[in-house]
Image (spheres, rainbow, N blue to C red):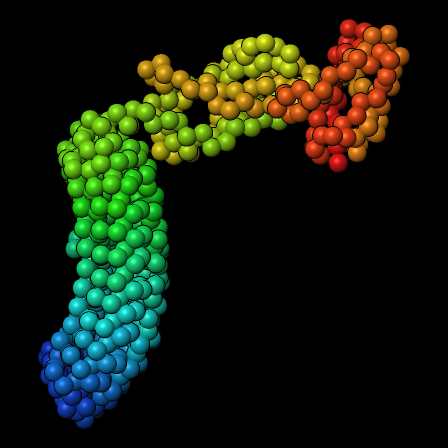
Length: 493
């Protein structure tokens, strides 16, 4: 359908061009005089269908082209050392093939392209000595082939391209390259791009410290390379990257310390190279570990200790813990429903659920849940503990690897109300609590919700318990009375 629409568009442009005396063969304008003469030589020309190249030592403005609204071909602005403004292109709305803005030493922005809303092919912005920002270019939603931003020595910002959602996802040469921009500190924007048709290259940007943009990139249909960025200290944009249909190369980035962001990288069809990153000591992201443990060809060398050899990476990968992000529980009916979640798992065979009551000396295993082995996605688990003890119940998880190694979670406490409520007042309290009753032997014990004892008291002679010197919060009051144990939640405020 897209091809059909493009052909119709081109046919209409040809018809309009003939009737409006537009050029019928590729046209190059080499001087300011030729630019100024365009409306005279091609009266009424609004819709181009041939390649238009503008290149000349004395071209200072493009005002003679302000009648052009569309082109079914390409526009090339190259080697114009005196061109300071693109305002003459302010009526241009669409370019079917490519836009190249290269080696125009006086341009400081792209103002003048504000109404450009469609670019069917590729965009190249390269070698513009004073181009500090891409501001001024219109909200282009997609590129049919590639994006190249290179060798712009004072460029500091690319957020003007934040409307881009794709860069040639279906085009074999649809690459994305950002390299040799000496003043570019980060790639803010470009977050909507999810896929490139061919390779991705980020290289030789000497002051770039972070990426920030490109957070939506998930598929690279070709090689993925980050090389020669001396100040780049993190790759925070690539947590969503899952697929690389080519080689993976992180090379010569001396400030980089870890590759944690590649936790979700599940497929690399080519070779993997991690080399000459002097500070890189942590390569044990799940995606890297999966590749190293598989049949692919990996080269890991000349990095910091911890990621200096394949063996070091394998050791680090073997130590990856299960990342437990949540562990909680709540009373449900006559029992307790436990819930926990993991963000990632490495060789996780199973979880054991362990329990002990408030006065039990040791934990005991009450259940088992099979793990998800090695996983880079969130996994959820539940376990129902039927008929727990009244009062405070403690739970923990023991996670066990396939090789038998294990580790424990933090301890979780869940309170179950007693069937027989102790008679106390006031509750909530500012400090003093009176325990009513006529049992012959009574004692009290107050703990916080973590089980730490706050005080213990014999109630035989006095029924007053004073929490005035304790911080505001929730406490558990346990009363032993004639062989019965009663527990009540107390709020101090």
